[in-house]
Length: 463
Image (cartoon, rainbow, N blue to C red; front, side):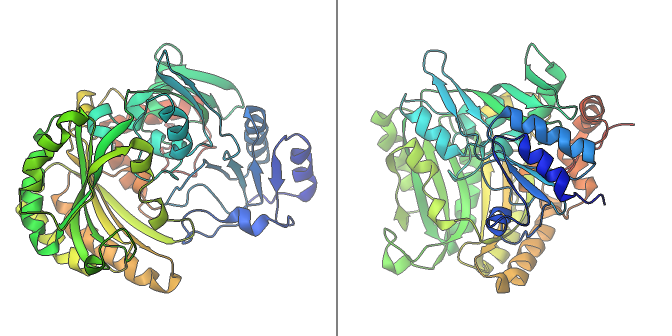
């Protein structure tokens, strides 16, 4: 490992507009913290980049000094890949500009933005682009790996709505990639993660979505097998304006949840209907009557940003996170039985399992049209153990792993790079891309032959 000397770091500091934080800085310990508190790494320096010029300086520095380089956007990276030991972290979070063009229905979004930043800017024009389910999630990480969320069935994945990216490459050059320029790079970044360079801004397509008919609908846990059997048929055949992801969860012991449901383990669907509000009650009437009245029904008209931020308070920064994910084609009876084995054992109040539907708009894109491969799946599944107390790490990790191990044989295989820990191995990375992996290794060799951008779910350059 090449050690970074203070005098060299001072030279870098002199070339930056943004702050360079080093172990001697008063705010170093705070700057080292990432969203997932299970990750604790100590970089040689953290560069809080003010602009693209700073990014170029940092990329050149890390390459020339032959030190590890990690890229941190504005949000989560639950796997902890936005930091490193003894290297340089490019922190893009100060780069938060959003420019909306309401006529073209596009938004130019800098890579330090969270989805809350984007929602705030676009909602003023009655527009939206698909994101995740928590507004504090970073735009860059979610988009480059996929982008599952409330609007996927209607509008596609986040990456399906990218029209263009600006990037800094491993050689320090600045390029634009779109359907006309650097087409191979544009193909690769839509699903290939941060393997090919530092994306400094995205151009997103926007949709006329403002107020949606949405929210959680919960049923008692003993109804879950019946709910899951109905849900697997309903959501895969529903009109594309209907979105809804399934969850096992523990009801938070706070208002507005009713007292009698506090801390109860339940199942539910978080709906998001983007069709006409005039007929939304009619559309949902048979859903509400499907199993008798739901135990909880918070579904109604809501601004899209309010839906997107609904769960923010449940998942603040600084909690312990451990997750496993898979793609799912069929929700079989065998799989439902395994779900019912582990759902009553949710180890902590914030631990959960989600099934995000990707039928509809995402499946209208070919599996070779972008690096993202699993267009033939119907759901992205994530099992996640979460708790604020490190003393519970063994419990949340073992529950997550055991649950996933039993379910994996009933999955479509593969992996979702946005929901992988860094201990899952190279074969899982290859499985995430299937037959697209070889093409990605060739593009990696072209744009990053020395694998400078390797602190990620790494695609190794073809040699």
